[in-house]
Each structure stands twice: as C-alpha cells, then as structure tokens.
Length: 346
Image 1 (cartoon, rainbow, N blue to C red):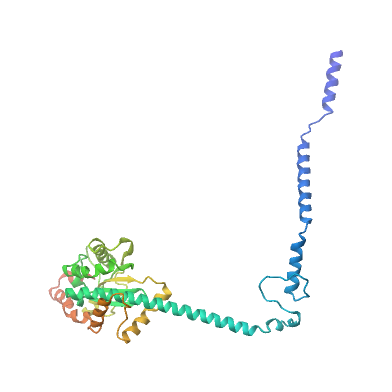
Image 2: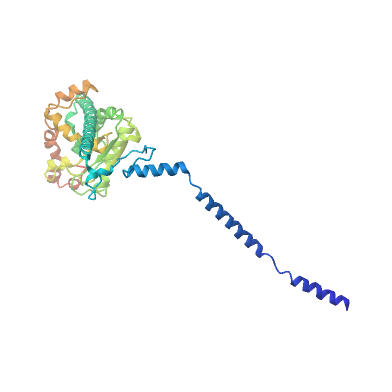
C-alpha cells in the first residue's frame, strides 16, 4: 500500500516539470536582440570631423557662406549671385572654357591623325621595300612578267595570275616555273615579320574530278603554295594561312579567255601589321606615292627601292602573257577535249 502511494507521488512530481527545450529558442532571441541594440548604438555614434567636412562641402558647392574649412574637391563652384531660376547664370563664363576644351580636343584629334598617318607611311615604306626586294629577285631570274603587285588596306598582294604558268589543267601541283617564282618570293617573306595569307581563286567554269567544286580546287592550290613557302622557303608556320575563295572574287567580269585567265590565280597577301584605322590609309598614300613617282622606302632597303623605281613604269604582265594563256582554252575547244571545260585549273 505504501509502495503504490510513493509511485503516484513521484509521477505527480515529474508532471509538474514539463520539457524546458523552449529556453534554447528564447536565449537565441535574446542574443539577437542584444546584437541589434549594439548595432543601433554603433550607428548612433557620428564622426564629428567627417560630418563637418560634409557640411562644408555641401555649403561650398551650393555657393553658401564659407563655414571655415575649404572643400578641396575638384569641380565647378557656382556662386550665389550667378545662379538664376532659369539656370542661365550657371553657364556664365563657361563659353571660354568650352572653347578651350574644344580646341584641346581638336588638337588631340589632329595629333592622333598625324600619328596614324605617320604609322601608315612607315607601313607603306615597309611593304614597298618588300615589293622591291621580291621584284629584284624576280628580275634576277627573268620571272618579273609572271607576278603582279597591288597595295590596299590589307597590305601588299603578290598576285600569281594565269594558272598555265603555275599549275596544270585542273591540277594543284606547282609547275617548274612556279617553283622558280616561289624561290624568288620565299626568302623575302620568311624574314619580313608580317603574317601572310595565301588565297586561291578559280574562274567561273565548273570543276571536274578530282575536285568536286572550285572551292576544293582553289583551296588545294593555296595549300600547295603555302606548303612550298613553309617547307622549302622557311616561312614560320605561325605567320601563314591558306584560304580558298573558289570563283567568288573574280578580277574580271567577262567570259573571254583573258578574263578567265585573270580570275584563276593565287594571291599571296602580305598582311599589314597596323590597326584597321591605320591600314585604311594605305591605298590613299599609295596613290599619292605613285603620283609622286613611287613610295619612299626610308632607307629600309635602298637596293630594292632602286629596282622598284626602275621597274615602276613597266607594262602590266597580264596583257603580255594573255595570248599564251588563251591558247589552252582555244585548243581545247577545237579538239573537243573534256578538260577544256574544267575550271580554274586551266
């Protein structure tokens, strides 16, 4: 009897003390409140020195009475007597400043133009020296009639025109004469410090086997020229690329044999090292130099420059070689040879 009463008493005492885990949440809340009040207290503390500096700066900017310390910040201080409701007083006396600023901008623009023109002239001199050196090598080998030159915003183009001279019919293999021409060009390009783009072209006639289209034919020819420049000429591989344009960029629009011969070609483009803005000045400077009797090479390659000056009036090689280039299509038409209808390989 007494044992059962003790058990009931103990159970009643345990029921009077429920779970106290709520105190953990309560303490977390108290901690957060304490942190909040600490932050509020910190925010209520104002740096008097910074406050005074801000007040003086605002007062000076709005043209109010000086309050002691002078704001050293740069900018325009507008006095009270110059401020009007229309805002006209704000610009009083600024016309001179604006004129000076405009003049300064024009001066800077002029200096930039002069710098660009000087860079373009230097680049044209460099390209002209490369051209003169190649011409000197070609003249020494009696091959100057097989190559044309042109200067545009991209740089100097060494144009191998008339594929009968450089390739067989519908073939990408370099001829013996093409190898001699490459021997004259490669030593100059390999040491020129310019990137080179070898670009193959074909005429508008359709190609046949082994090339499915003019794209394959023009690309194969450009690749063969690139390989010759790299493997035999020592051109750095990181400075050269090959591109095939097919028949998409013709030089002549007609379908005459001479036009077809002009369109099937390989262009070796010596790319300009300057920016696009500077390189865009090259064609105009080239025309001015041609009108004055030839570009000046600024002592970069005097011997090559002398050769370039003596050959500047030479006739265009394409007209001289056109009859020979035309013989292949005429003979093919007469014999009804199937290869006579093939493309840029003619």
